[in-house]
Length: 380
Image 1 (cartoon, rainbow, N blue to C red):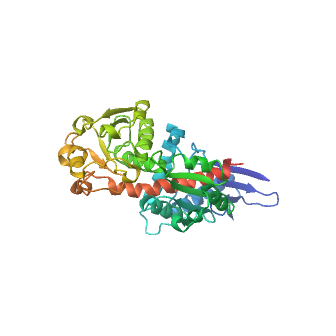
Image 2: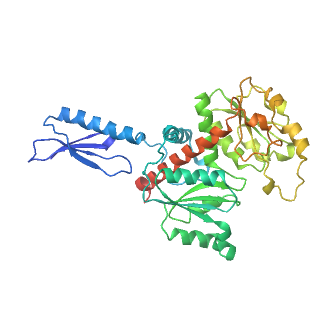
Image 3: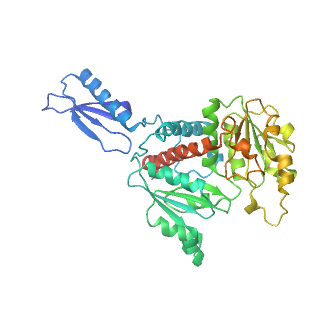
């Protein structure tokens, strides 16, 4: 039998010994293969017919086939594990879902038959819902585990819970937990892939990725950007993950906050440290505000909210210290009038906050798709 592969193997042309016509087999990612006759006896004509058919299927799904896969990991637990090329690949894969999510019908069954668990041991609305929307738009079966109803409240250990869920053969576990490093521990215990949706004050990889995608959509290139991250640096997993990812992409990072909320570990990271907004915001293109992590400030005196806003809360006057057309970001949820002025937060000419939410769904769709594809291709 004669055969030829096109489009990295997604199209196979073949002709059996007893057949006059070239046949084609078209296999899109996660979709059933389509077999049909090209109706041509000439290979070059068969190639044109197959490529045209392939293009028509691709345009119907509105999802382009991924290029060479740079990101080959089956877990996403720490941004420190990611190379610059891997980060850029995830962002490129996320881009195709931005337009897709604006369609009237937002459904593609590339993960049909796959099982994903949302395991949130801390309160969350934005992140949990974002992952849920992402999984369902990809066609996966998603199960939300409500912690207050779980067996952990009956005395079961976290490891027992993970072992029980692992026995159900899930494909991905999305984990948020107050203990630092817990996602990595779980990834070493279960057979499923693990995505860290926030572990204590340690890491929040997908938040940093969606922030990077939001910035990339505005500036395209990170090399000449200066970004200020302001507020409760000490207790913020978002700050740590963003510092790592944005600096790897080439941006210069300033961190600004009260002295008591600036961890000593900052001297190991590629940042400039400031305690005054006026100095820290000079020539910044992006001002990223952080939520005060009240739930992690245990046994410490909380600052007076009016005093904090006067010194570190972002308003139009303080924004003038940054570049003329600087943009504002916040991972949410916001404490309006404490971390950021309410009018500024809602100013669509300066604020990227709602765009961050939209980018979150796109990034998480890309991460789920990539990780499950990697499980199929690379896991033992």
